[in-house]
Structure formats: structure tokens, C-alpha cells
Image 1 (spheres, helix red, strand yellow):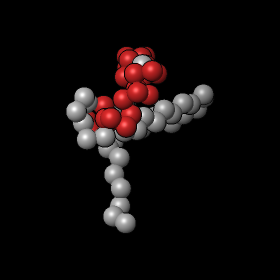
Image 2 (cartoon, helix red, strand yellow; image 1 turned 45 degrees about the vertical axis):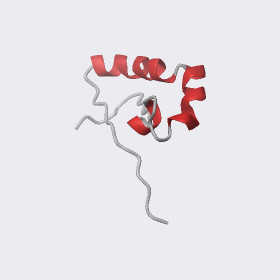
Image 3 (tube, helix red, strand yellow; image 1 turned 120 degrees about the vertical axis):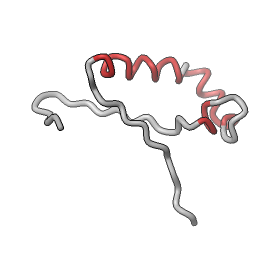
Image 4 (cartoon, helix red, strand yellow; image 1 turned 90 degrees about the vertical axis):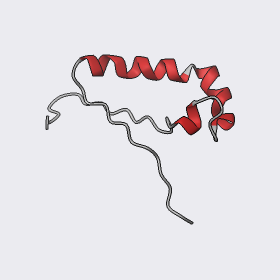
Length: 68
């Protein structure tokens, strides 16, 4: 594992499951307006493209909720 000895950056991208981002997804209707107005998917791809090209590990982790 690399240790950060200089400037470090962490970006956290959440709620990229199909339920949110796919047309017809169970929760897509609630986020589609903001996704379109902010060009969210295209901007997300631009955000990770540079670090990925430099060999930075990109983690994808689903969001989950506890009962109750």
C-alpha cells in the first residue's frame, strides 16, 4: 500500500447503483432531474479518468442501510 507523503486527495462517489442511475431503476425518478442538470455521469467519468490513468485504485462500494 502506498503512503501519502505529499498532497493527498480522496473523492467519494455514492449511489451509483442501477436503481439510481438507470432509466427505469427503482429510485431513478427521484434523482434523474439533478443527474441531467449537473451532467453527473459524464462529470463522474471525467473525475476518475485521470487518476485511473495514473494507476490509482478506484473503489466501487454499494451503499447499504441497516434495518430500522
